[in-house]
Image (cartoon, rainbow, N blue to C red):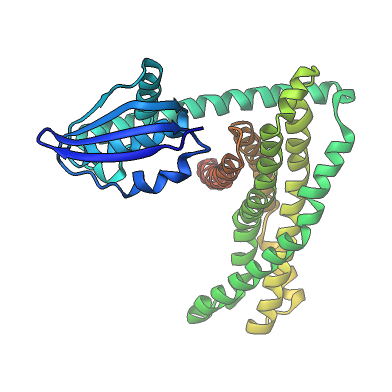
Length: 374
């Protein structure tokens, strides 16, 4: 194996660079520094490859990189004496050399902005259609499972109910209690100005039972359970476990999605109820401490001035929130594209989209019930 060498001569026609020897991965260490140290200028560069006895991809990259740097310096580069196979290899490597970031034109015209906006809009529309299709398939499998309970995977359902519901009770209860405390404290501060402290009971009960209790519970579930759904199913997608399920004749939606969605449909109303009770306890405790409203008076006004519909409205929203969170989380998981980075990106997108859709859906419910006079 002949050690490669690099010799340069300057003539009237430019710089004459002669490369010889075996330009292979095993021998590049002897000339790698010479190639890297060569500083091309705007003089014409002639690279003579007639002395090369062997060339592989690494050697071709060294030659191509040198020619690329010379072109960036303004020189005209010409190869001579190379065998056809070597010329083809160097040309292939040259085409795949990434562009110099400093030489890229970062300025964008208005037309480029419009094009980018159009691509994002088209992509968003495709994602919306895909998600609606996934929603339809999920509802179909869900109704089929309800009509044929033997298809339900009971162990998976119980496991998901434990993960999404039972283990979320402490954080949901704490959140509800603190929300009740904050509402009572802030409400008392404002109502004291008008001598209407007693109405803090209605403020807490209506705002918690009708809106805040189930809304904040859904947001916590979206961040806690929705992200877990996306990460777990997405990891299975990366490891090709979902493809293996399809090969075995198993439906991934029925096996993976339905137990998670049903667990949310069952547990989210329960968690919402717990959050409501914790918020009322926190609000009642703060009202007693700050305003002197006894627990008996708090319970009496709660019973007399808060209708059952205030509680029912919050519970009506719960299944819809659960369906939105479960469908978005599982759909995002199935969009993972074979890398751990994709799993992280889809998990983030799942949480953001779920929280946004929960808030938007809550706004639509508020408008609907207001129009209906409820």
